[in-house]
Image (cartoon, rainbow, N blue to C red; front, side, top):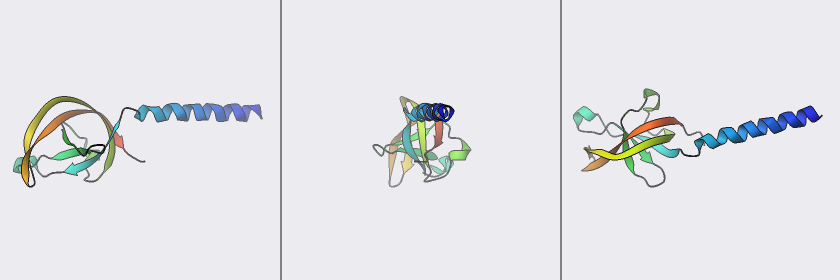
Length: 105
């Protein structure tokens, strides 16, 4: 019986440690703003907490699906670009995505 209690304790400890790795990730939604060659901004990330739009320098094709919920870690350096977002032109910050995964919550 002690083996099972110890095994359950180990399993719960591993689960608790695994859940903490998402601690510094930001929830976002993928938005397709149109083809860059036609004046759009390409794929953007809309940050869930404040609704801000940012443009990843590189977004893996596995995540290029409009409306997809993701969790990201990113580096910001206030670099950006002017993009045509309907109905006006807007300054969009360009970010480096260091880690991304689907938000299954």
